[in-house]
Image (cartoon, rainbow, N blue to C red; front, side, top):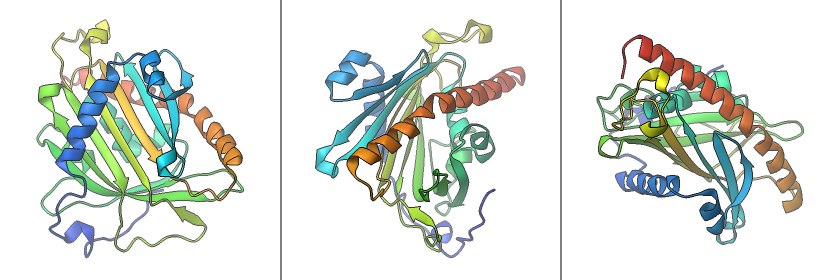
Length: 273
């Protein structure tokens, strides 16, 4: 169920500068392009530990001592039958996400900068290079742990010259969005994703051109995120809980791929791209 929060007098109605700068988008783009070229062995040499790997994706993690031991995750992979723009849509659209994200309890766009467009529309139709919004997101946690929720600034950028789309999000304050009873507000989260066209591995069933494009099937994805869950438990217990969370990733990616593939197939039939 989506929540309803009126921010007409807050973020959505103010003439504000984007919370996430263009510099952050470019850094995410450059980092994603660089990481997409590395082998698993090269990634591990950079201090990442392999958690899971299959034909579609690889999940890594590392602990950052300089950040109170916070755990960062790295997700890399490739999809031969999905375009970067469709993959973005499958991630940020509520109706799409509820089909594959079993941990999602609520997700709702709270507002957009005046004169701008939200991530779910601005970067989807190809008429804007950048789009930003403010998002409320709540995740389910198993008993006896409490649900977590987030108020996030999200900004996407379409870089046609690099045949890539970047999505950056991080915690920010949200006017009129109070912390709920029984829910822990996570205020130290960030995520950087790059969806990069890779037509050389695209499915022949779509007869995709060899020219890269954010609207053409065949892509690589790189996501790096850090999530301080504020779990007041010993590190060993936190590691056990993290391991349980990591187990749902393969099924989530499989469901995400199926949703995105269905959307892509429909777009091909309708002559899009």
